[in-house]
Length: 476
Image (cartoon, rainbow, N blue to C red; front, side):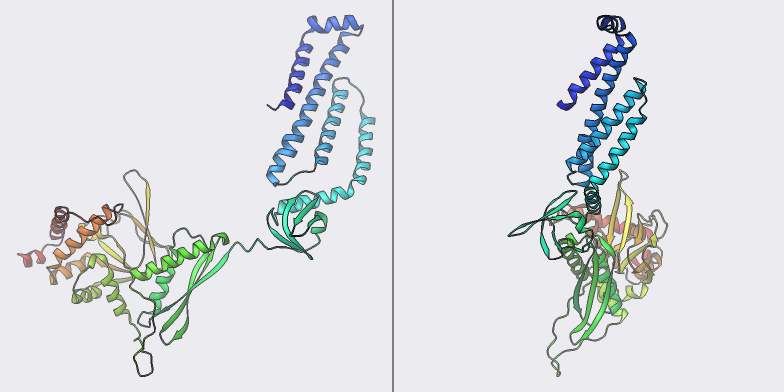
C-alpha cells in the first residue's frame, strides 16, 4: 500500500473503532462536551465517512485517471482532469454524509452545484473541446511518439502527445500544435506505410518445362516459405516469351510490412529449394545457333514426368527404361486446394509422388503430440502402405492446387513381375531412406554397413512376402 493511503486508512479504522465504543468513548465525550450521545455518534460516523471519501477521491485520481487510463491510452492525462474528478468525488461524498448521517436537506447544495457546473463548463469550453480532440487522437493512434508526421506546412518528429497538444521536434525548432487544430487538417504519417506489403520475384525458365509445372512449383515455393504470413495467396504469371525462355513473375503479399525483407528472403530461398528438388534451373543465354540463340524445344507432359521420377529418392539409380515404364503405370491425381488426399488409418496401399503443388501431412507421435510435415515436388508419402500393406500413417491435405502421381500395389506388382531384380533396388533405397530419417539430427553421418544390411534384408523380406505369386516363381 502506498504511503499516501496509509494515513487515511489508519484514521478511518480508528474512527470506526471509536464509533463502536459506546461506554468507553462516546458516553465520556458526550458528558464532557455537554452534547447528546446521538450527536457525538453522528460526528464520529460523519468524520469516518469523510475520511473514506478522501481516500476514494485519491484512488480515483491516482490509480484510475493518472494510472490505468494513462497506461491504456499511452498518453499523459492533464492534471486539471484529476483535480476536477477529485472535487466532484468530495462534493458528492459531503452531500451523502449530510443527507444520510446528519439527515439534512441538500437540495440547495445540489442546485448550487448545478449552477457552478454550468459556470465551470462555460469557462472551460475551449479546454473541453481540446480535451475531446486529444481523446480522439489518442484512441485512433494515427501517430505515435517517434513518428515523423507532416501537418500542413509543418513537419517534424513527434516528441510528446498530451490531451491538449502535440509537440513536434525538428532540427531547428520545436512546434506545439493544439490537438483541436489537427482534427481539421490532413495528417501524413511518414513512418506508417500500409501493413500489407506487395512483393514480387521474377524468374526466367527454359521452354522445356511446361507452364503448368512451373506455375505449381513456384506457387508451392512461395506459399510454403517458413515464417512468412501471407495476407492472401500468392499468384504466378507467365509475363513474357523471351529468346532464352519464359519469364515468370511470382507476386506475394506480406501481412506485416515490417517483416518485408526477412519474408522476401524466405520466399526466394524456398522457391529455389522447390526448383532444385524439381530439377528446374533458371534459364541462361543459349548461344550457338545460326540466329545466335539456341532455342529450347517445348516440353510435353511425358518428359516432365520422366525428369520428375529421376529426382525421386525411392527410385534413385533406377535405369532409364525402368523409369519410363513406371511413368506408364502411374495414375495422375489432380486436387484443388484444401481437400483430403488420404486419411490416417485408411486402407489404401499406394505411394503418392508430389509432382506440383504442396501437401501437408498430420499425424501424432507416441506422446500424442501433433507432427506436421510439408511435401513438395519430388517428395512422396505412403511407402509403408505400399510396401508393407499397412494403413496410411498420416492424414494428408493439399495446401495448393496439386498434381500427385499414385503408384498403387497393382502397378508395383506389374513392375516387379517385369523386373524382379528391382526388389533389391527398392530394398536398398528404402533402407537408406529409413536410416536417414532416423538420423535427421545428425547430418553428414554415414551408416554402418551392418546397420544398412539389416534394413535391406528386412525390406527385401517384406516385399517378397507381400508381392509373391508369379514374382516368387520368377525368383525361384
